Image 1: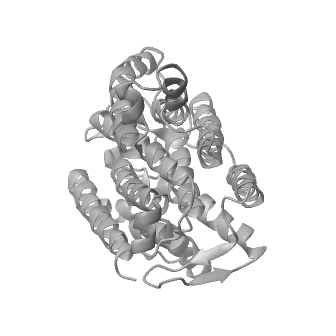
Image 2 (image 1 turned 180 degrees about the vertical axis):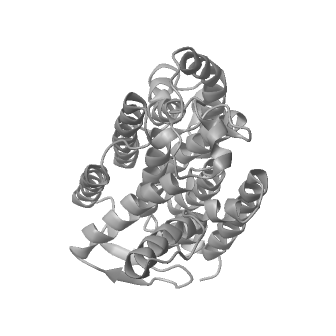
Length: 358
């Protein structure tokens, strides 16, 4: 929107020329969202403390987590506001990709807000039922896929990294594929968000990978050289994802151990949905799987634990998700967090190699 304003009212101004560059707007979006979060988050924390609106801790969780009870939650609301403003102000609003991302971001955040609100209202760790939450996220994913395919932004194709020009046309199965990507990503981030700062760093590393690939896919020369499908308008997604990274950095300032605020489901579900939707819009779902493999590990640990326990009444892990297993094994919380961050960086680097190894 800001580019449209400058082009219409200051066509020859220096700022107009600068804002034509995606790289400049991406930097501006990251800086804006970082400053927005760092300015409003302290006010948000003070309000939640004053109103005694805090985190509800699971009764069956690790004993060390009981000290977190009452910590302000739903800090993801500030990330949601920052990301929405970035999409409207710094991105070209004539590109449908941005509106699809914003819809996925805000709608999933609304589901998370509903869940967080019920948890605080009932003063227990159970909010929206799992079935209703899944149905809501499924509806959002199907709308996203229909919107993207019917408008011609993407085709029902699945691409594999490390292979040049490999495309598998899956037809109507693309709806199931897209559902698994968006809903799976959203829930995986939600499961990972269990320790101070644990989820937000891998969100940022994964967003960085998708930001780079979005920029490459939107650049005819770079996409041709690196054998990436050229997708008109995908460069604008890089601006939006830069805003997500900036807001994530701002949130980490307050969410690092010991956390002053938690993101809540309103943050984890919306951020996970954005990662899944972004990957879908640039046909890089497998790259999302690689770069976000930490989220995959966390989700798989829950699936394995539930399946084995229901079939044999035995546990594979001391507790799921996986980060709780290491806590109960005697790792201090900061050590679990930092080691998981290191893994997320390694997975992101591996994912970036797919740009060249084709």
